[in-house]
Image 1 (tube, one colour):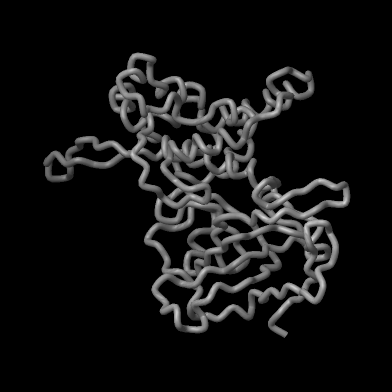
Image 2 (spheres, rainbow, N blue to C red):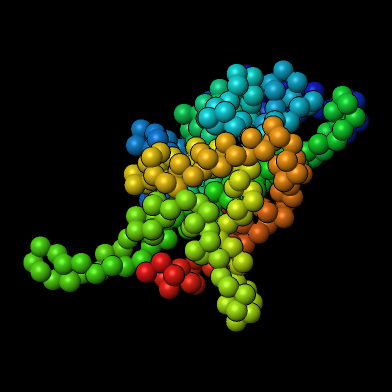
Length: 331
């Protein structure tokens, strides 16, 4: 059997008459037509050398659910070292490869179920930016499913709503990675005594020796600069969200660059942020207990990094404050 049938339920949790959803298992996905062309940039995680030859695939309208009750649950991406539990499966529409003729059978969108999920990772490189799930193959998570289902407690949820917090966290990760990996040119002498321009990131020359708060303060433009450039962002990343979500950002930054070690002041600063947030929760401090507007944060972070919610580049003309003023402030 190449299909995995599940009963189709309507929004009120009742079985739809005469309907059954069928999902193609991963092992039956045709080899031709769905593996996207690999990019020249590698995945930015601790196993990129081992898995870089694995197929790239794109999933739309995806959701995470318990394989034992697919119509009754929706799960967020796990925060515990990005590893999945045994019964969580990934469902979605598998995109065909762009350069495959639409007339071929393999080029049609295929509904698939992915089992035995190993872990997920955030990739910061522009050509492969996004949230990727690894099973032995790589799956980029694009737009989540927006279909609402009715839970036993009568709440209506969709994967898009469940994923909102992680969408904002991924946007924050993108902003921080863009800030750390922004390049500048430095003149150095080669072995022949000739002056050459060498690209270097601000991570190696500034950010790794500073805390997140110090990097944030250094790159926030003044009110005068904002008045002169109305499209300028007021901050390079959402510092308030980073104070709440520093643990998961720290985990996903751990292999961004060899210079960003766990002992670097920037990474130690993230660790202190996490401790401060949990202390504030224990003391029931107002800022830690108030609900946070993840949707606003997500939209602002996506505008800063000029990307879609799933990491694809956009053509927005807005600029980030660290692109416009960083060279003046950090040199």
